[in-house]
Image (cartoon, rainbow, N blue to C red; front, side, top):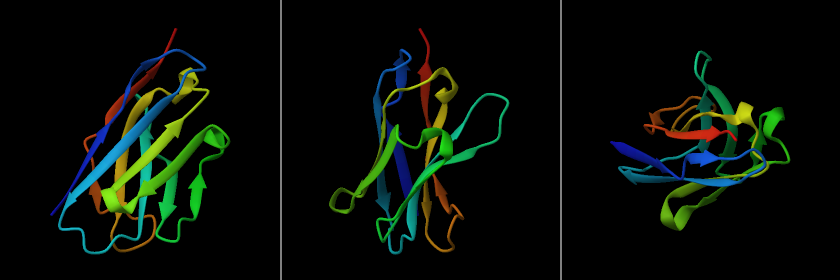
Length: 118
């Protein structure tokens, strides 16, 4: 079993920055990619950023140029650096691990809340 624990969420003013972390532990045998998703109230969960084992990254259009995903394999940790935050970025952010098929999340963290408000 794999456990994912997110941290780093909180309240920030528009234009501010936050850095989210996701630490993985447990039976990590095969990882295809790691990803960050988010879910705002009343909305579906959406992919924010993804980093494959090849270190190729993908971002949703609304966060390109503001968010950066990275990973530290030695620490089994993935990060999401978020800059120039906007109120529409407010959501619960979830870390996900793809162990088998691309864009299919096999393990989820419990999420961390990011609130962007003045």
